[in-house]
Amino acid sequence: MIRPLFISLFVFTAITLKSQDTVKVAATLTPDQQAEQDYNKGLAALNNSDYNTAIDLFSKCLAQKTDFDKAFINRAVAFTKMKRYNEAMSDINLVIKLQPENAELYFYRSLIFMGLAQRDSQNVMLDYCLKLNAGHAEAAYYKGLLAYEDKNLDGAIRFFSMAAGSKPDYVYAYNDRGSVKRAKGDYAGAAADYEKALLIDNSYAFIHNNLGSAYRSAKNYKKALAAYSKALELNPNYLIALNNRGTAHFENNDLKSAEQDFEEVLKQDPNNSSAYNNLCSIAIKNQDYAKAKELASKAIQLDTKNGAAYYNRGIARQMLREEDECCADWKKAVELGVDGAKIFINTSCLN
Image 1 (cartoon, rainbow, N blue to C red):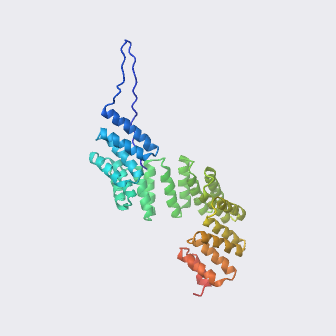
Image 2 (cartoon, rainbow, N blue to C red; image 1 turned 45 degrees about the horizontal axis):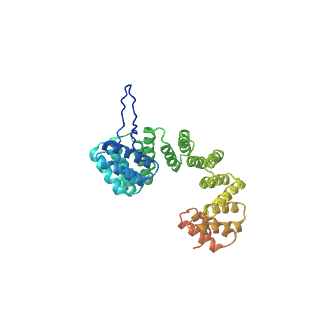
Image 3 (tube, helix red, strand yellow; image 1 turned 120 degrees about the horizontal axis):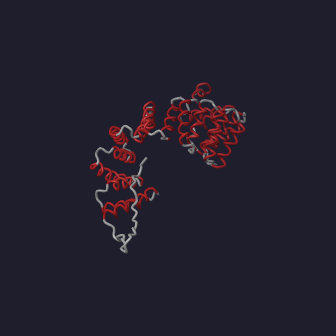
């Protein structure tokens, strides 16, 4: 994350003397005092996400005090937020010339490279940041994200562990390490990391959802349902969690509760292709193949790349004796990455 730097606000106080003389506060600020005042106003604007105002105030500050490094840094932050990456890079480079051993500056530069989609340069800057400060939690965290993108799951876990070790209350590091462990099939380890994140801050609905998915993968449906329900308690409009809870009910053979959750998804989002496909799965389980075909077709109408819907419609069509059509659906499902459809093609389709 980009963290603004803070300095204390200036407060001028009149002092009453014992004699009859009084001290007046000067009406005109010195250039340095004016620069500090503009800086503080810019910082407040930055924290309020008023980036244009922040940039203007930091620029005004720098006109008064040209070597004010914190103003350059925070103007770069504001430029980055505005996706004005070249201007942000110019400011950071100026400060790096003044402070070449400041690890934080190379971390800021890495974020600018990330905005510019220059991934290799981002990686180099993160490495340099960690060389200067091996305990830089955010740099380690972003290295973990890059490792995960490269499908280097063990490397991602190592970097997320470094981040958590440097910053024990780093919620995202625990959450993301849990997600990597879940991808590796370590569901108990994933659940432990999600639980650790929630011990630090219980207010993240998406982490409760992730915890539910770890328990669901381990077929611990009681805990999965509790976690999904907590996510929905925190965010009643969290349709991913609602859909996931319906899936947990379905896998636990509670079709009525599953149907209620999927129907609720559609009440909030009538164009949710996944919910229609999930209702199709219930219809197949209930052997209502005509309804299943209708629901899968609706899912495909809403999302032509919903491979699972083609897979399910193929099953419904096979049971309805629509032989050519079911094979066409399964072939489309395979094209969309649903490898399970290959079994049906090999056993039921001649061509």
